[in-house]
Length: 220
Length: 220
DNA sequence: ACCTGAACACCGTTCAAGT
DNA sequence: ACCTGAACACCGTTCAAGT
Image (cartoon, rainbow over all chains, first blue to last red; front, side, top):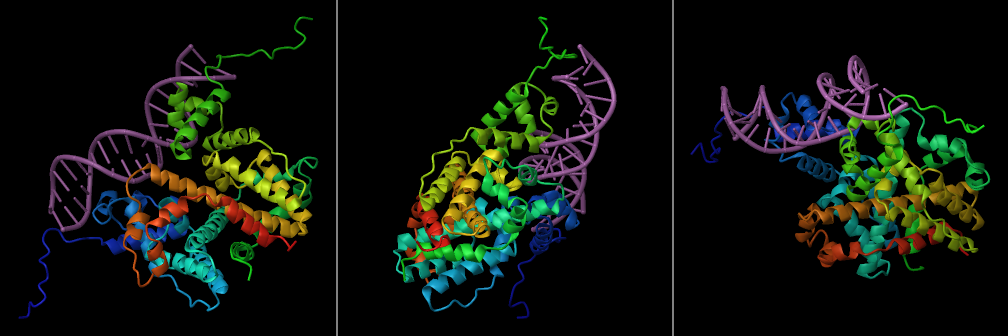
């Protein structure tokens, strides 16, 4: 009677590390240095084990990244969305952007295996739904979602790369090029000159999003 | 008198491979398998030499990629642009997109080191110029250019990744997820179901671009 | 001047063996 | 059942030596 929940008898060597431990360590590494810095060997060192022990807890590196993704997605806020469909679309897109901006490494994984796991689909669902509510056909709504996704992913990827470049302090290729622009051939860029870097560092995601959505939806 | 152009006397061992040869081989590799498949060792094999011989012709792998980029950019068409500024903006953006779409590996390099070399700046110049001609301030025009660039780069990157995924034929994570969608939580996506893949495979770059540009520019 | 070979410090992953 | 060690097939790059 005392054994009413039969603990499936664990046999063999007791585990020294758990899947959760491995994932937690992977998360730490990836948050600090991006996906590029996550190696099985470094991860093993982080959990105080050998590279091969990891393969007992995850299938391979790809599965590890997908697990990390699910994990991050599961913790995302799902904000209340406004009644008005156009606002609803913009709010959902902004929430999607925020979710990614907080965690740029996610995008690298997303792009590689397209579309997030369940938690990420929540954004797609509401963007498509709001687009339909605005008067688009389901097909048009999917296309509209895609445009928003391209814009959003591009913004995240490019700005993340920019931050990475700023972190290494060596001058970038771009700066060298902008330093001596041909005033004849490229007058507008030349006249902007040094302000380019500051201007492109400004966050204009929302502006661009509103413009895009305004153009995608039928005139109110 | 016969030596009027003194051939700076070449001394030492005669070269077996040239920089051009190295670049041409690198281009072949990258066109076939993407940037990921370009390794110094494979490149050496391709030119029939050793990895270390390459370092005599290019500084390192990064320089190699930038040279490849310059090279590609130098060969790009610079289409005649229409008089009407809004059309001019759209045409320049489409040309930029075409230039990248023909060569998705370029985007990986671009994103990593931001902005292309001179030839690529041509697009930026004309987009910014056209935006100003449409009535934006130079600052607004740079922001508009950035939005177009985010959208364009995102489209190229995501679609390139999609093609790569389609090439390997194993079922993607996405397909597995879409196969069993929760009809309660994600009704719109569920009702689209199997059509999702076909819909997102359609090329809607131009549509999205027109929408974005329409939203970015002042009402005509 | 140009090229080679051996070496260093890395990768992800498989396989056979230990506890 | 879980972990280890050695090994395989890779990377980019440095360094000392050869022609």
